[in-house]
Every structure is written in C-alpha cells, then in structure tokens.
Length: 232
Image (cartoon, rainbow, N blue to C red; front, side, top):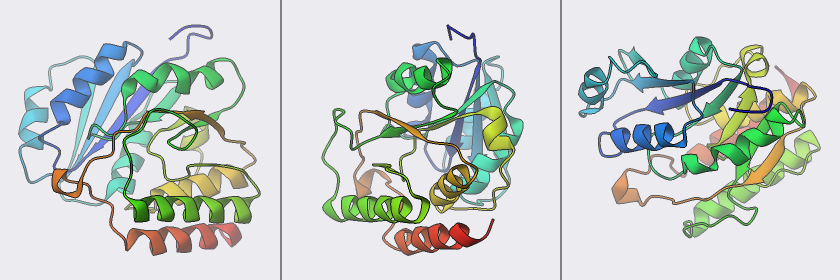
C-alpha cells in the first residue's frame, strides 16, 4: 500500500469452498496489497480444511480453524480479533467479488476521507445480473437502513466492507450468521462513522454453485436493523 503506508489484513471466512478457495487466495495475492491474509475455516466438511492445511507454510497466510460450524459472523469476529494491520477488508471465499477492486476500496481510507468504506454493487460497476428477489431483498434492507439510521447507502448487504482496524475492533459484535451485515452497519453508523461507497464489479453465483444466503435471512436482517436502532 502507498500514500500513508497503511498495512492491510484481508479476512476470508470459509465454509465448504473447496471449488474456489485456492483460486480466491491466488487472486488476493495477485493484487499485491495484502500484508496478511487471515482465513477462518468455519468447520468445513468438504476438502477446504485439507487444502488449507497444505498451505500452512505460506508466510502471507494465517489460518484459523473452527472445530464446528458457527456461521459467517462468528468466523469474521474471529478474524477481526486476529487482525494486526491498519486496515481490515472482508473477502468472501467464492468468486463473486473481485480483489482487483481493492485499490478503489482502499483509496478513501488512504486519503483520510473515511474510516469505513463499502463496495457497492449498485453504483454502476460491471455486474452479472442478480436474481430479482435477491435484488428486491437487498434494496429493501438498504432502504430500511437508510430510514432508521439517516444515511444514503445503496448496498448495505455487500461483502466488501473495509475498516480502519481500531473501528471494527472497538465495536462489540454478537452476530453468528448472515445478520453480521446489518449489525456491523448499524453499529458503525450509530458511532458516527459516515460510510464511503465505491462502485465494484460483481459476479453472483448460482444456487447450484453453492450460493448460501436464503430467503429467511432477510427477516433476520430486518429484525437486526430494528433491534440495534434502539439497543447496542
């Protein structure tokens, strides 16, 4: 990284991603800006753990194993606690999000514009078309976020969330599953941080490719947004 010479921790939660795991690690490395890549395997039952154990000698990788599946939020909390660099970036283990977007995501933090940056799939970047009802759920939850927290986000549910490390490590997080996204967003906004959005590319995967978020995650997310508007 340049300008302020900030260091970067990339956190990759992983659950049964044997088909894409090595590919995404290679893609993150190819960008050349990560100082550490923290992979938290959340109790995978496929070959993901075997693949990760074969990579344990790589000096850029820090690999943490959960003995049982606890959920994406729990894996991210483990990764945040382990992070040592100035900036923390979340990367899913599939290939929906492109690490080549890292420079654009990091720039607002490097330039001191914001301490929190989200990569938006709805600000004009190249994108594979989404499922209609997934888009409706995403837009509805983002609208609810904007109403409850007086902001103008376009993509609250995005994977690409980037923080100054002290911001995310000072926030008490409880989410274990996909309700992590609304919880972290709510608590960041309640602490007075304005989120800077940048457009990103998006290559959403199909259900048969292992897409994990389901329709019943939307009500959980809505309840999380409402709950943390009035509690912490």
